[in-house]
Image (tube, rainbow, N blue to C red):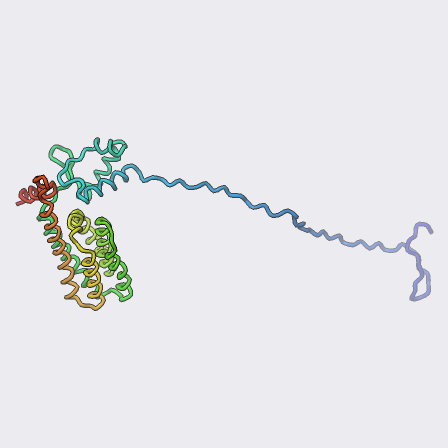
Length: 285
């Protein structure tokens, strides 16, 4: 019985069972294995190209330097401005210089001349008084609102800024620090329009500040700023208003004194800033 497979005794009955034994097929199962690599993982190398520090545009460089020279009276009020000369000095084409001058015109630092040229805006003694009055009227309103609204923690947060004015620094830095402090006081009101209004007044006054800042002792500036903070913190409106009045008009007097002291040069000629302001004042009277 060569065609029959699986013949064997039935162990349970003792009989012999003949026939083809059933073939049992096992279902094949495929297993997927991830074989770990014995090599260290290759890190993706990202080539980092160092960023180039881009220079400010030409008009911005001309504007920044020209504005600084006007504000510090390095270029005296009433001085004619030549686009061609400045372009040659700054080593650039006249176009960016023209753009810089146009921006300075919008700020009131440069004015148009009758001959269609431009000049540094003149300064008059009447400007000192008018700006002092405008600043005083705005800042007295600012301290009143700050007293009503400002939180004590916010007031105290300005104390380091007031103390910083005691540190030795150049006149331009002191002017900038003074501006920062007073705008921070305006910020205590929570009214951005007041901050903007005071910013415009301080911008218009900046040339005068540069003339008078050397006559201000660092201790005096620090003391005044600390007293203003203490008055706001103590909700003392009368004291705060008095300090604002004193700072605005004392600053104006200090500027006038500085102008008088530099009015005559060692050679006996009138200082260009002083003489220009005298002429402008006479024209407006």
